Length: 299
Image 1: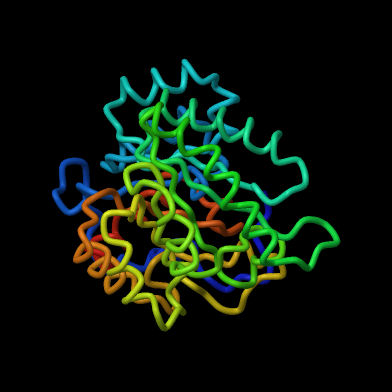
Image 2: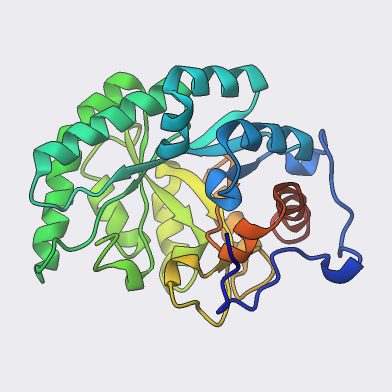
């Protein structure tokens, strides 16, 4: 995979032999007790390599994606993670509920719920979907999300899986998520039981929101996942790949973490980064940098 020419963010904090700002914490370090590594951050690694890399780095939780799990096989993936002792901090992803064929979307999400249950995931992350092709009916698309979730919630409750609605930054409203703020996500979630439907607080997507502190407080026990990364400039041509290592950009991740903790969240802090330079870097170096930045900027 080639590096993203538009990115100026160094994927690691030790370029050209420069010493890291803090020593790399190792397995058993209590400061890493809540750290999770989302598979998207080490995209070139297989599921087995991701599990082994987490163990080497002392990262006790892993966020899984459906595609690598399918490549490994669901039963084999569940066994691999279970035998490793790692927690599954999240399963990505369900959602995309706004299209014309709601029945197909609901069926696919039921399968994702079953997979999350088999893996023992803390939540199934729901990226709800953007506007259907050619549509400008934003209210209608949000209505379809609400209707589909009402169908899915009983199955999620039966399988013991929490659905986490993830609001995405408004620049993704048209194509990925018609829920753009934590407040909007809570408006939808609160129509359903808190033990079944909650929200994901992703630093990249919510840091800009002037209501974020109030909405995190409102979310309280509905917070099912906290994801960390940074907002770096300039944004690349593909804005989806504009995430950086915590500490390289403009987000006060520690402040957000303190707010979600104050709201009652005690789960994993999962680092999820989409960045072509980071994907091209050595996976063990990426994991070590994630651990260093966690103790430097998050805990």
